[in-house]
Amino acid sequence: MPDFFFTHLTTSKKSFHSFRHLIPTTIYSNISLLLWGYEMTNNDITNLKPEDFHTSVASTSRAFWPDPMFGFFSRNAVHEHLMLPNYATAVMRDAVQHGIVEVIIRNGRVVASASWLAPGDAPRPWLQELRVSLRSARGLLKGRNRLKGLKLLDAMAKKHPKEPHWYLGLLGVDPAFQGKGLGGALLTHRLEVCDATHMPAYLETQKPENLPFYERFGFSVLEEITDDGCPTLWTMWRDPRPA
Image 1 (cartoon, rainbow, N blue to C red):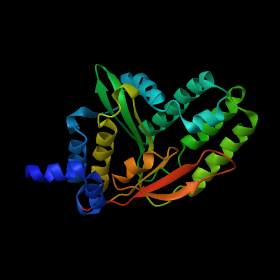
Image 2: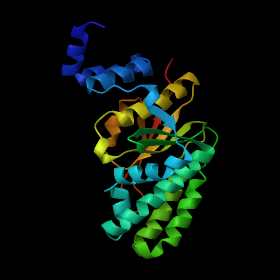
Image 3: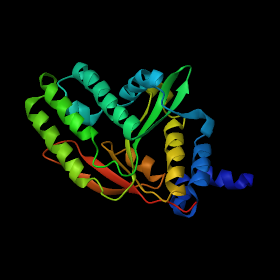
């Protein structure tokens, strides 16, 4: 590809993203990663192995702290640190059984992971596990927010699409490795499968700054969930692209 093309794109990333729908996922994502100065190969991405489960939970927990949703339900930072590993463990365990967890390993430990539920596995079994976790962790939660949390989980379940799709339960990159394109590489890896099998993808995010990131990969906002004073949650959907 001519150098002037990359020069133009580098100085006008918004223009590049404006025609993302015209570009196959692989080509778009590779150019996007190059614009940010990162290169990844599929050889960097592997399926989670049992011996790496602990470091995957640890890195994902660090990625989500601090977090507006967990901060809302916890009494203080100490309790939030206790809640995050329980949440990550529940989601990853269910993804291992009913989907896939894809990871990137650096220096012998997981530094980035994506937990997906496979098509046909919604409604998600881990919602029940999270309800149990919330009830068992009553001493760690503010009483009023505990009940709001259960209502939010119910709202999420009702909004979850019934159409078969890949569901992204968690995408986390250890803070020490953020800004290096690892999250984008993990997304690209699974979205290529979505496109090849003509399967849509779905996710939820509680951070508004995540919306443009996911939009770069073809996701669009379906709905805002603002249930009973809880932090806002956005649901996002992505239709498969032509291969």
